[in-house]
Image 1: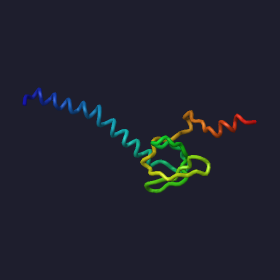
Image 2: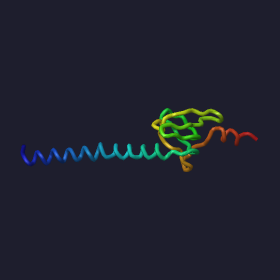
Image 3: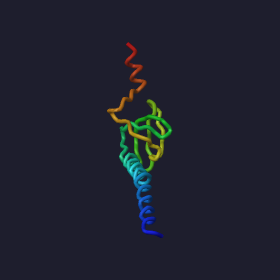
Image 4: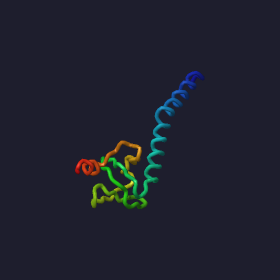
Length: 101
């Protein structure tokens, strides 16, 4: 193999690494940090789209309250994201209560 061809091959590998592998590793690391950092009281969204508040945690699972008095058990891997105070999320029950005199 010619030296020029080897340089092109190495450059292609480096480009693929930067474009595909590095971003995937960062996403995976961020997801692991999210899953391990969830605590009681956090409001989360599951991968299925449920929104609820964490009421109890375990090593591999947690208890999520999705409505007043309705709790479900789920695995930690089902967490899609955490809802933070700075997001424009409005609880529908709070919105309805505000509309009533």
